[in-house]
Length: 106
Image (cartoon, rainbow, N blue to C red; front, top):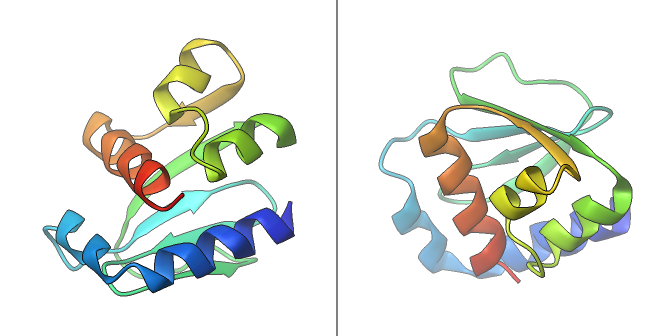
């Protein structure tokens, strides 16, 4: 799973046009259980701890296979959640932002 997350981070960090998705300077924190993924307009990185900074939080839990499909952009976040493969907790706006980030970073 770490390899897939690192691949996503490398892909995201290479695409400078992603900064346009962020209207505020607050990063997006994706709580994946053991890891948290911090995504901002400038870069993305992994952490074992949730940052204390002001951010938009979203929790995504599910099977490793479903998370891999999401990270590779094969299936959308809301589709996987509707099918019951992922549990997603966060505001609708944050869910849409995260879904667009995953799809555009593939």
